[in-house]
Length: 224
Image (cartoon, rainbow, N blue to C red):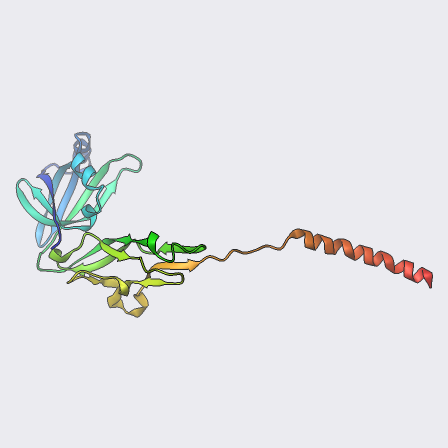
C-alpha cells in the first residue's frame, strides 16, 4: 500500500496579489486546492513546511493528506511556482483525488547496482539514463513513491525499455498504451569509439617530396 504524508494548512479568505505578498512576507505560501467536483479553496501553508517537504521525492509524486483546519483531504501536487533565484516557494496548486478513480502521476526511477554491472566494469562503455521518471496510471492506494530498476546484469550494448520495468501490482505505464513505438529506451549501454586523427606531419612530408621530385626532372633532361 502506498504511503501518505500529512501537510498542515489553514484556510484563507484574502485573495489577490496584495494578499499573496503579505502572506509571503509572513513566511506563508499561498495555495489553492481544487477538483473532485468541489469548489476551489484558497489556503495558506507555513513556508518551512513546504520547504522541508519539497526536499523529498514523495512530495511531488505521492498522495498527500492535506489537513486544512483539521479536515483531511487526499491530494496531489499539481503545480508550483518558485522564486527565480531565492529558495522560496511562491504559490502551489493541489488537486483533490477520488480514491476510487485512477490517477496519472510522474514517478521517479531509482537505478540500482549499476556499479556492479558488466557494463560499468568495461572500459569505454557509456551508461546513459535516458529517462529519470515515468508517467504511471493506477488507483491512489497503489501509487508507488518510486520505481526501482536493477542494472546488475547490464552489459555492453544492452538497452532497457519501458516494457521491461517491473511494476507494482495495479500500476501501468501510460506510454505503453499508445503502442510499441512508445516503448522508449530507459537505459542504454553503448561502447564509445575514439576517433584517431592522422598525424599532420605525414601530409607535410608528402608536400615536401613533390618539389624535390620536380626539381630532379630538369637535371635528367640536361644530361641528355
